Amino acid sequence: MCMVIFAPEDEKCSSHFHLLFAIFAFATCGGYSGGLRLSVDCVNKTESNLSIDVAFAYPFRLHQVMFEVPTCEGKERQKVALIGDSSSSAEFFVTVAVFAFLYSLAATVVYIFFQNKYRENNRGPLIDFIVTVVFSFLWLVGSSAWAKGLSDVKVATDPKEVLLLMSACKQPSNKCMAVHSPVMSSLNTSVVFGFLNFILWAGNIWFVFKETGWHSSGQRYLSDPMEKHSSSFNQGGYNQDSYGSSSGYSQQASLGPSSDEFGQQPSGPASFTNQI
Image (cartoon, rainbow, N blue to C red; front, top):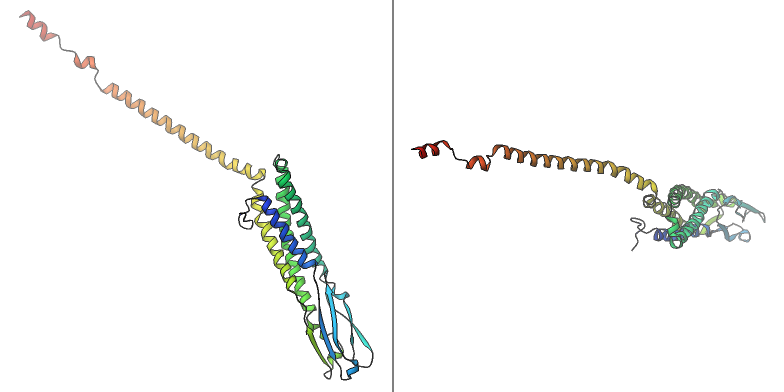
């Protein structure tokens, strides 16, 4: 089982999650189309319009969304446009998602079919590491910008705010109301997937970094002093042990009497007995 968000052991599985999350991000944002419906009930019922549809969609250039409403002052009609333009943040978000999808697709192909070439030298892991860092930053910026842009879209398409743009609704004798409001659930989902993509890519930085030569060189740099210290310690202990054993042996040899000296009898008394 591959747990990419917390422990992405397999790079192929990580790329699969990148693919899916990127698809959900740009599909829920780039494929959005919604609208709202308003009604204006004039004192003169013949001038009323009880079904005014206002449609908008990605990339949310709301200032270009035009619709006609009655003025309740004869047959004249008023052209009204929504306020705001969130196209820059929305397009940037979708662009990041599309390029992340394409890179993840290419990375999946490399991991599956060109794994040996990927690990031949350090260039492949280094490129992968740099691109992962860049996409993590882009996902953070893009998701934050689109969250702010979505907030502006919600305010601009709020039926209460749109009714304030109509001159007929400023007259107390006319009745203006919202029939239904736009559904923003898919756009909210796109923001969630944007930040999930950031978490996914940022969490994968460490695991991609371990594949680079920077990590292996750092490991060698840390292990060399430890090996030298342990080898010098073992060498000192060996010399000390050998010195202790040799000195103990020499002391025992010098202090203990030899067998020849200990077993030798004094010759003086024996010769004196023989003479007697």
